[in-house]
Length: 237
Ligand SMILES: Nc1ncnc2c1ncn2[C@@H]1O[C@H](COP(=O)(O)OP(=O)(O)OP(=O)(O)O)[C@@H](O)[C@H]1O
Image 1 (cartoon, rainbow, N blue to C red):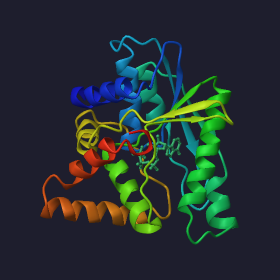
Image 2 (tube, rainbow, N blue to C red):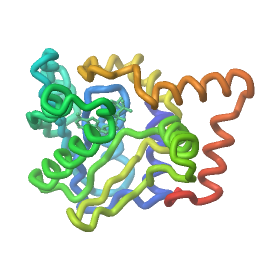
Image 3 (cartoon, helix red, strand yellow):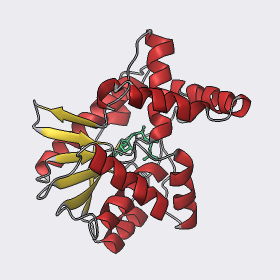
Image 4 (cartoon, rainbow, N blue to C red):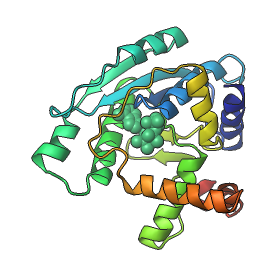
């Protein structure tokens, strides 16, 4: 966890992610990434020298055809970290999969989930939203944009949303996924199994596999691509 927190601290400082008085809503999906983000941001409060608050928010996707996840262990995890936590119930899953029967559900689902998270963050009095995207996500997103849309682009480490007056930050962006996975395993994070019906069969999964294969053939591949994204200052990196 210390290495992971070191990478988070560097990202927070390099990209100016936090300031005194911030109230940060961490989007908690129940996956390892957002649980690590939550634990890291809660832990860093003690020694990063910035006075900020952390709130955990889960958007329950509400698909009546799959069992509702049990958020109780996440709630206990937040309590142990001294972080207030709330679950916002929605019908996004029902709308996407049962009403609209979307063939390509991921982008609409992500948009609706983001909107709901931003609204919940504002309602909780937060001025920032933290998401659990890490370095591997950045490289995957870069390749998805390149191969699927023919453009150079990634998500941004820090994005200001003027319509909502909210700033989205991604403090794990300099952390490798293996650092997150090993912290999650060693500290026994209460990972909630995804209830998404298309989990494991998405475009992103295919890109993940492509990068894994390239890395096996050519060690250092991922880091060189990420280095290029940073050196080009692509999308604020
Ligand atoms: N249902 C949700 N409620 C709140 N925040 C969410 C939810 N789903 C995703 N997020 C936020 O958006 C980020 C990116 O979502 P994505 O679905 O790509 O997650 P992921 O890469 O599988 O990460 P995780 O391991 O945290 O699920 C998550 O890390 C989390 O911060």
